[in-house]
Image (cartoon, rainbow, N blue to C red):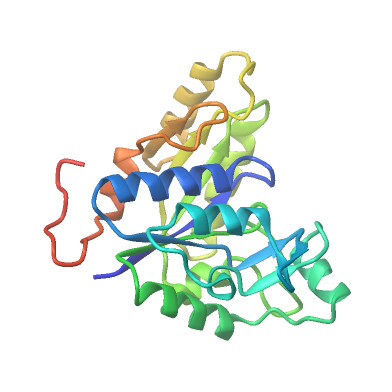
Length: 233
């Protein structure tokens, strides 16, 4: 069965792409064909006749095969601002049907699709839609990336509460050491383990995108095509 997961974060700039790439590598190491997807990306440059986003390119590079750019990133928005503002500036309306179609095309070629959101959780996509509508429409569980820095406990607890109140399943969280000098980082992680009411699926070191993340792979319970599940991963 093809599975997927939606990666969100406690804020923008906390390493969702770094963690998504690490998860793609971990899935590949477990024998799972996984591809990345960035449904909506703000902040693009003009390359090869299209708007192109650096994070989407990183996901494509880490995928088991290189998906078509427009499938990985259906909405590539020029300005590095909130998606609904970037879309409005270009006269674009972000809709869920094209995102669902792109996801289905990717899922048809892979065992797992790692879908990375934009910014934090409560991000508007337009007058009708919020980012939470993407995992709801695609029926994906959510992994929360917690940027380990000052304020991360508050941001993580609020984000987890919002994810659940929006009717989504919080599969677990991954801590990303974006601030290598954070005071009492291990104590912060211990508090998050105690209070988040969701399992810690791994910790990613500062600047690393190759963390093994075995707990995250196991939580996804993905079955590789033609192979048994990996119960010991």
